[in-house]
Amino acid sequence: MRVAFRLTKYNRYSFIPIAWCASRLGASVVLCHSPEEVLSSGADVAFYSFMTPQAKEAYREAHFLSGKLLLVAGGPHPSALPREVLDAGFDAVCVGEFEPVARRLFSDMESGSVSGIYGLSAEGFPRYSMEPSSYTGPVELVRGCPFGCKFCQVSYLFGRRPRYRGLGEVLREAVVLRERGRRFIRFIAPNALSYMSPDGVRPNVPVLRGLFESLVELGFSQIFFGSFPSEVRPDSVTEEAASLMAEFCANRRVVVGAQSGSNERLLELGRGHTVEDVELAVATLNRHGFEVSLDFIFGFPGETQKELFETVSFMERMLSVYRVRVHAHAFIPLPGTPYWGVPPSPIPRWLNRLLHALERDGLLDGNWSQQEHFRRELCRGL
Ligand code: SF4
Image 1 (tube, rainbow, N blue to C red):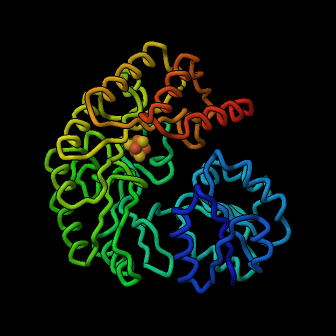
Image 2 (spheres, helix red, strand yellow):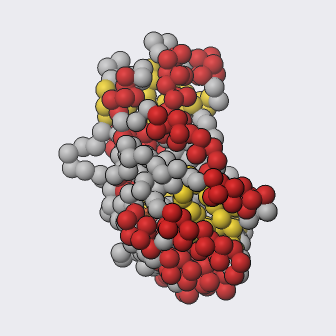
Image 3 (cartoon, protein in one colour):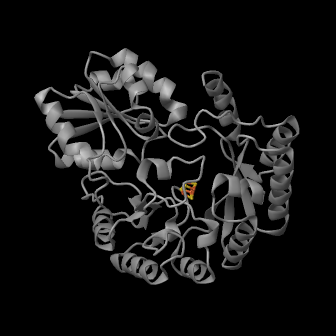
């Protein structure tokens, strides 16, 4: 069986587990960068994985390809709204994780009976396991998150119980990367410092040290940890963890999720940490030589002027006292989260101007402006 994966800049990491499963189940995988390429690839089935901002484009392509080959969708948006995705022209939708449904999906594709929703078994999530294949990318460490922040899909898609990929599996994948000549390694996790943590927050420093030492022994000269495509929670940053990262990691910047500078707002979001925790994390990381990229989100539902002023004043203080860069987002309601269907607050003109000014000064980056545009469109349809 020949499988086409429609690759975009937004799904290049979700492609890895799908490609691994497909190749282990005997399918050949071809990467396509447009619907026309999908069509000319000679594939029997096309896989789409997308998030909410990309849903409209995926539906347009499904309309174009429908009836010409099988169309299977997965990822955050299809997992939350599978019926909408089927109505848009896809033949099947995989809800949640791909590995538990891969065998049944492929066997149904072989027999020509694929259709409908492929979801979790009654026993719930199995502990996931992926064997390395010819497709590699950042190495996944953790799935699931105990916090269930109201704006984020991670806990609602992957569950609140963090599942850690065994050290043996992680190192097996690292060996494959080295065999292919890679000397650097990156990781994916909702909170990189939570790997093998007993409570999902406190870093398990002995395990992290073991991981880093093994990677050095394997010949990796650059370990990127706590930077894109993963980040760390502020309350996971301890003196010991920061010192360990300084000893082993090549990245000089760490991404920390602050999200707001208002304790009231953090409480409402269910973040489980305070503004003071964020400052402590930034100070600790700076002390150990790391610059910090601080994530902020603007325009949460019901966000008040007072909360916005607090966030801006906190952000400006961080920028003036510490080595910090702001990574700004405009809040988008995501399906499957408690905020789905709840209208965002507008980003006032004064804040818009300020964010643009910080951007011009090189102190701020992020897609907040495009997100602001997208959410206006999305909310018209809510
Ligand atoms: S801590 Fe991070 S990954 Fe977990 S739910 Fe909150 S935003 Fe999502």
